Image (cartoon, rainbow, N blue to C red; front, side, top):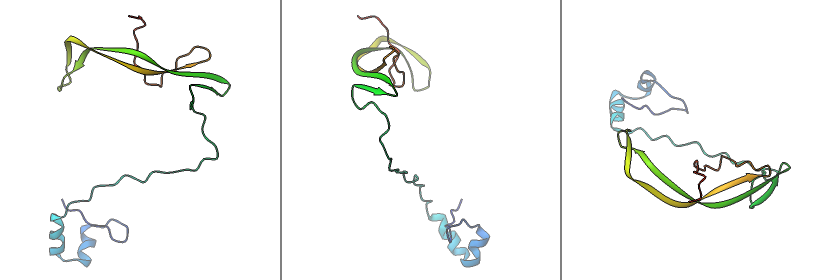
Length: 124
């Protein structure tokens, strides 16, 4: 496969390339590596006001009160997938302790998009 360079900002075919280049020029392109595509530049917008976000542990947003806190959790892993994707039961569970973000609304609803794993409600 040969990558043909763009001319005038547009892609060209082999026939168009050979109108202005020699067959030797075309053979020389076989050695050239295709440039890696670059991601599009980010779009930056200046906003007229800040969006409503929880920038403090207690906040009123759209007439609802929110409270955020980091609580201690214990995470126990009893099964994992091996490199082949097969389920493997661990002989000893992997137990880690950490803190997780909890956000609660005024009616007591815990928000799920804090990426909190399902918790065992026991207080052991």
